Image (cartoon, rainbow, N blue to C red; front, side):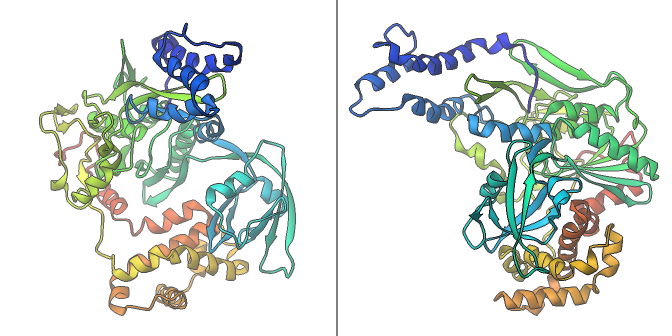
Length: 537
């Protein structure tokens, strides 16, 4: 998460880092480092001049910086120059590429979606094509990672890349020369009318363009008759704070604090301006243990002002503020410069001890402790007690606890489900089904059109079980009966994703999703109408 900061507050730190790096650029012109007033520079000088073998001290510095920064807190980090562009692309909301979504299955790169208006669509690449070479390098039938594929396909704008694909309707490979272009990275990946007067919006991340996408989705759904909204932040690990502030501002009256950022020597409270267009709309926010940072700012602001109902599971608990500073060699330092506090005064950040690896495994420990299945398993610090605008009790010291706890639903899980899921057969079956029926399904532009073309739930499930058996997972009738709803919805959702896009997945699977259905139920009962009367649970 990025935030503008007075550079003077960390100047000594930057000077120290720059000094360590810079002094070795000119070390060939100096035979001694004794005038350098730092112990680290002295040590590096001894290594450079006295170590038994020649050593590249620049390499030592590069490898050591992550460990040095890790001594500060769990979220300060060093970003090498080679990774900076990809890191920034995620926040800026675009990158230069060829415009496809793909997966790698059985050492084959399968194109799932061709982005509308993108470079691949312009030259005729189709969903279902299998990439067999990139710039003459064979990529089919060899072990290749998703990251390696991305590295081959991404590149500077206006550069060219040639891919060769195998298409089911062609007996020979087809070659395409593609000019890379700007590819949008959307934050709002689904927005549709989920129930009469209720709009659903899935926000996947927070980047520079997130607010614009979000307000466009709100207006679109409002024009379609929605005056109540389910905002899904589950799995959203955060990003730029300004988008979360602007999103919260849409729902709050004037002069309400959204978040208070406490820096080293000052505080920076952010207030709503009263210009939000949806101040009277009912709102439900969905969170889980992977909702972090900007997601927690948004959810915490609406909860503390009793402006929206928070449903799901306890959030991640990341409340440290990072600012990014680029260094001379195009690497960057992402430095923690403050902490976030919700309007009631809660610190979002969970406790940590420097050097203690338990922080990294906190989510695992929470799940092992049973937190995903029982609200009673959640360890709240009852000493950190705060009150919302209407006097409800909330607790600090570890993320946002939802108003309505919805456990992870395992009622449809069986051993058979785990076997086929772990083998990746849901995704493989969906892709193969779409590939075989693409000529029939390609004209389906909406999820409803697609669902009318699919066989009955029972027939589709039988096809999947047969497919799994051909892949050496034998049927278990009792397990299949137990998991039949989950299997059916997941298969249909993945087919919808492959044919009509990511939104299609959510349009199908949300009908099964217990947390989403819980949200709709509470809206229909009037629980999301401010002021909320539900007690904190």
